[in-house]
Amino acid sequence: MLLRQEDRKKRLPGLLENLSAIANKQFSDDDVLSIEQIDEHQIQLNSSDFDFNFLNISFPVDKSTDLLKRLLTIKEKLSLTNYFSLSNFSDIAVFNIKTDFVIDNFEDIIKLDNDTFSLYDHNYKNGLWIDLFQEYWYIDNKTQFIWIYELRVFGTEWIKLINEKL
Image (tube, rainbow, N blue to C red; front, side):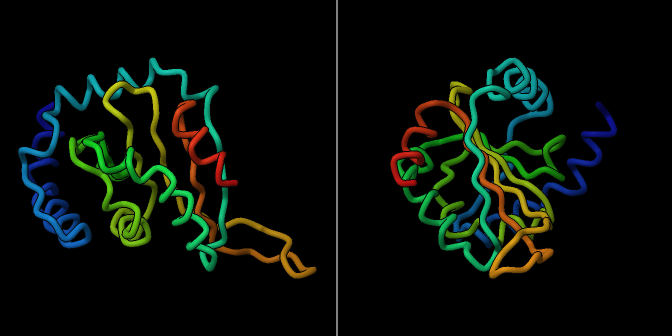
């Protein structure tokens, strides 16, 4: 616990500054769950049924506008206060914030973390994560090793909204 608190003390100010710049709104320590609340958040996530109730959609990086269109279908849900975290900071920082900024800024958020970001509603019934990785795809009659965004949506409500636009 002490190591996490020290890590948080060192890394959180930079994260707050960078995420505030990306979102074009100011975030503070008050927007971040305590270490104890983060542990409880992880327990709630682990006890959810997300492992069986999700939709995966992958997009080549050069087709990121297709991902943007999917995010716009849940704009109303993302405008609410949700839990938001970046993979490489999830042990020290889970935000309790309005998450609509991810719609237009998902690429910059991924660059900030160099990995995945996730968000979940307060009832742990719906959520999503976006990841960036390389994979072989067959495009234009040839196999290519390309960068891919993967959108994973959890929960029947958000899945239904996105599925209606597929």
